[in-house]
Length: 426
Image (cartoon, rainbow, N blue to C red; front, top):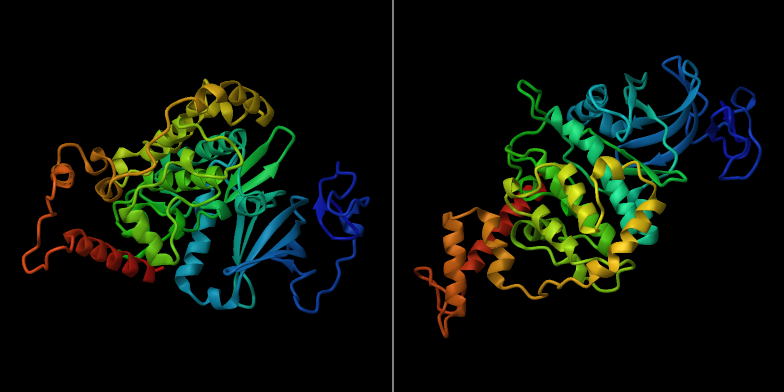
């Protein structure tokens, strides 16, 4: 390994200079580790193997270091839990679970977790492969939008990794831009999915860490079943979450906004997403064909969504006029994807656009099939629409209700209470 004498970053033997500082590199064994009076871990060798070199990042759960693995002679990332977090047995178990789950996961597009151990002071450390690049959240904060080719390649690689995890009954449950890491190369991004600590193992006999009724995940990217903390949650919750990420990359905004947690969850439970192609002031053209894909992705009932992340990735690529499937696009350069998509864009943009205004019933129920085919909910939705279309036909009154107040106010209030209770469990 080599090291930069200015910033201390570690690089492979074939590297010639530090791209951050621009200076030449020296052997890591010749690089004196600077003493940090604020962090006594700097310079320490953990587990007689991992020599801590520098602080990479701080988070709510712990601090991340770059370290030299003296056995494998490579740089690794070491995440150490904060002491207060280390006192919570559930958080520790989730931390450990990521290590245990890692050995069953493919690592082409999922970060590899190498080791887990307890520290002398009572905290815990997890060792992962060291990644060069940035989280998707950092990229969106800087650029706000992603190009179509970058979205297709990213989504395709996420699908390659997640579909294999789903095949062994592992549901991520916390997909968000913070947990998608982009390693830049000449061909385009190489994606690594992070943080399987909130994973739900649906295999028979799997240990459960979540008490029924506890909500896991980040509100902006939660599926309705996550918002309600349903035990029936499966891999299609990840399909919803990834759709929310795609929507944000396209439009620069989340699909279900809100001023606080309960408002976000209420929006997820009761609102339909605005068509992406109608969002104003986007950087890249969004063809109307994308809207139908996202509409299916955001079905309130999981069985009506795409059956897999791979199916979602295929649908997005086809909506951009691409031939083939996500397995091919995952390894296609961004420059080639750009040429292929650009050749189809004029035709795609000429397609009819969706109506901007939806009825209140559509907003609440979604399309007729969003609550099932031919069920009572569909009958109610059709009856509501007929009532709205009739001249001077008021909505049916609830006994004891004053005229002029819609019964759906009570339904909405009930949903808001459910969402609030779920959010308080975060």
